[in-house]
Amino acid sequence: MKWSEFFTSSIGKKIIMSLSGLFLIAFLVVHVGLNACIWAMDDGVMFNKAAHFMGANVVPRILEIGLFAGFLLHIIQGFVLVAQNNAKRKIGYNVKMGSRGSTWYSKSMGLLGTLLLLFLIMHIAHFWVPSRITGLEPVFIDGKEYHNLYGEMVAVFTDNPLVVALYVIGCISLAWHLLHGFQSAFRTLGLSNHKYIKLIQGLGAGFSIIVPLAFAMMPVSFYFGWV
Ligand code: HEM
Image (tube, rainbow, N blue to C red; front, side):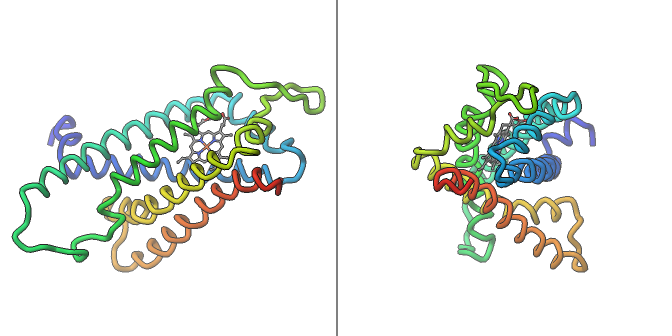
């Protein structure tokens, strides 16, 4: 099989989905860990310093380009797969599978992915654009200047119940998307034989609930003044 054929074959597309998905999962671990610094109860000092480290160093900046490429690849390939599945479904089956063929969230990956995409556009506009393009208020810590991303979170989430609700909905979509996506990625790559399937399912379920829950608690914490 030639490389060009790999990218257009259905197994090639699924492998790209799983590898880009696992890369995005790794990003979520770093992102949730870094953001958890908001709960240090130090008015954002630790969080602003950690975010500064990510923004100011070459390696994370190169990874950021990879991250946006990973998102693009995952989103475009996802839309292609959904369109192809829909086209196949229109031909129709003689036997109705009901819920036996696949679970609800496996069938709804396209819808959940689209909700996530809308969340992501809003999210990038809230934080990445001011941080990298339009500029943020500086804050001085020990005489050194930092971007006040913590202050930006206060501004975005405090007094904005609609935005907080949209973030919580985004995190619920993320949880459902991951509940299917996490184990599906391992299955596509052939890493979930009968010996490890239970472990991967357990890890997947734990990750899909704990990480989005931690993310959702961030806007909620700002709104209710818990940080
Ligand atoms: C719900 C709680 C979340 C909060 C409070 C939050 C906060 C932030 C902040 C402050 C930044 C800017 C970082 C910087 O410019 O240095 C950022 C960037 C970003 N976030 Fe989130 N985030 C959340 C959830 C998510 C989720 C669930 C995803 C993915 C599905 C996500 C994807 C991104 C991406 C792609 C960027 C840009 C990457 C970069 O700056 O390198 N975030 N987020």
